[in-house]
Length: 81
Image 1 (cartoon, rainbow, N blue to C red):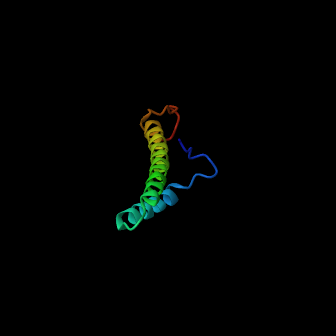
Image 2 (image 1 turned 135 degrees about the vertical axis):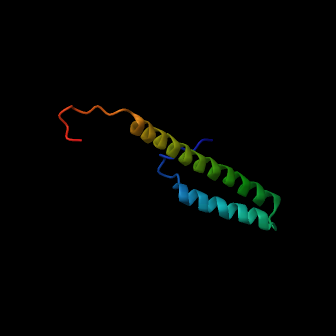
Image 3 (image 1 turned 90 degrees about the vertical axis):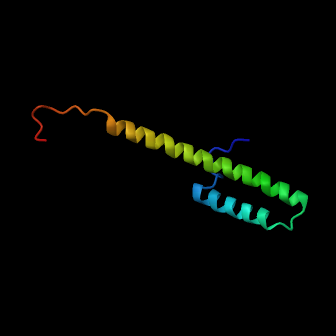
């Protein structure tokens, strides 16, 4: 299942990362049943996918901004600068 960042229910990157950190902490602490561990693992996978989608979107925006910045600008010969 792919969760789209644009979905209203999708958490922000920071929310997803924070919850993912908590999921990992709970899994590392142990003391969970196998079923609880599997549920947490699955939630962690979804959160990781959300984080990756946010990061990919940021990469695309950054690449576009860098491309615009490196494009030669056309200036009039009459321009003062």
